[in-house]
Amino acid sequence: MKSVTLDQERRIHKRINVHIVLEMNFLGEKKNYYGYIENISEGGMCVVSLEPIELGAKVTSGFYISDFADKLNPIASVVHTRVGEDTLYYHGLRFEYMRERDREALNQFLSNQEACVAV
Image 1 (cartoon, rainbow, N blue to C red):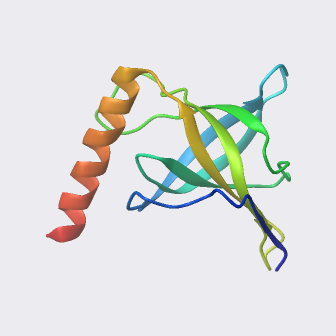
Image 2: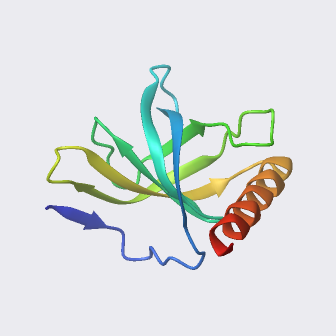
């Protein structure tokens, strides 16, 4: 498996395994790309897609989480990318910007998911 990482990528937050449909586009483009979030944390997410995404690219994303009616739309940068043996692309995205209410909703979602796992 080929793997590429930006040197400054450091995981500080615990990731929660999920399966959430994700819509993405590159800043300045109108074309949408789709994938799913494999795991997520306060600081970023692992996204699985059919298309490669260039290391360092900035993407806007959109996804829904349970118990929050609005779509979350964080801006993230690609800090890790690899091609799996299944020919899918796995991308590590670090959140660069997120509205405060989206961040609060995400943190509540993560706390709820951790509580479910701990039971």
